[in-house]
Length: 325
Ligand SMILES: Nc1ncnc2c1ncn2[C@@H]1O[C@H](COP(=O)(O)OP(=O)(O)O)[C@@H](O)[C@H]1O
Ligand SMILES: [Mg+2]
Image (tube, rainbow, N blue to C red; front, side, top):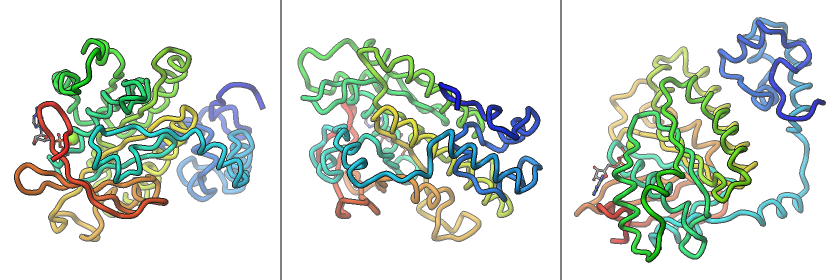
């Protein structure tokens, strides 16, 4: 197939109107089609299942998905995994040294539990040299709730307690923020992120952290009602898949937030399963559940990790940022 990233129109059988319908349904890339099911694709784009099958087959070949890798290949790729430090020893220990690159960490918890504070702190820490726990990289921050605060970054930079850190302006310059107004817009911003990350790849601050805060808020607001749950989950799944591709390509950390309610009775549907929670849980690599405790203390609990024991770590959110208790 042709060089460079393919557009979905480049797939045999996808004309302009099919491409439009696919995009509307959230299939923005060849990869997302490669991982779709024929029934799904046929339904959203009004093509026959047999045509859908052909399109998916072409997409799989083009996107090189579905092939096998040996254990050795994966071992080799995992050798490049790096850790982004919280600069709070208890949290680093909980995650086996920090947030892993090539993995998505999901922060979930109630409103005010500290999700956005952690995200701000990581956008600072990622820029630090490795001896201070950073990845010498920059951050892309998809902000869906308008909660990014440069003032907070300033306080956290001042609170690092490291001599000779660069100017606050320098830190702010290396955080690239985009506001997402709808779930579709949010998904498009992943494409834009890919472009920006490509441009910065050879700079002295390649993108090493991709943030979506909040991953689920728009999806939750737009897909309210039982009949739309499947569609929402499919879209969220695709969104996560695109994020995975991106962090893999850049050996970067993926960091997403997901607000859940402590009193699930206020939600419709299954009260024990927060909306968005499950679908994200199946794709995120590390899940940290955050809750408030006594005396301003907060607790992070590691849930369902592929290679680490479950456990908890306390931390504080102070003016100077995340700190040990
Ligand atoms: N400058 C600050 N100094 C101390 N604590 C702060 C500061 N800014 C925010 N916080 C704490 O962070 C909380 C908000 O956490 P946040 O991460 O925004 O919640 P969410 O989980 O909803 O994203 C506030 O309630 C406050 O306790
Ligand atoms: Mg928040």
